[in-house]
Image (cartoon, rainbow over all chains, first blue to last red; front, side):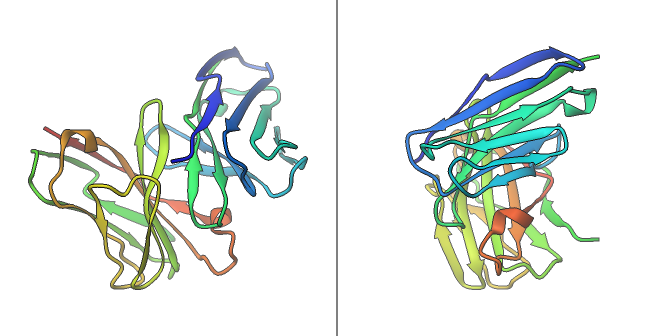
Length: 110
Length: 116
């Protein structure tokens, strides 16, 4: 199956710092998605990207669809304790079949 | 309340003993899907269904079966579970009619399965 590699695998940051993570694939995707998973819960969609080069924001979160269509980036500005969780990227080709990244675990130290 | 429910939430079983994990949604969604989540691998799609009697393989379908006899239910069947199927399983549903199922894909709470 498709492999989506996320980095870093985990991050420990101070409250108020900015966070950057990325996701790379060996294949081209038509849609890139970013999810957040809280402990004991299912993933929740944060941002969806539909076009190469697209930059989309959702509050303090900004994500970009890479020009090559093989990568995507997520930035979180001014982190707060409730940002803690696992962040997943996902790529979609057909619209119904999803490939998820390996996840980035974020810990925010107050 | 709109929700996706899964049962059981936790299950310990032994190799070879058939089991079914149920998934039910009360939102009249066409699209439903099963994922497994493993440390270091993220979520991987097992099967998905675009509507009643329509199912398709995802990335890791081996060892699993599904059925979609009614719109609200999408059970995951493990005919002969093996230890490598020990995982956290998520069911999800979405309206499906917009063509962008991810925009409104609701995930269930997860089922943690241990196969001894």
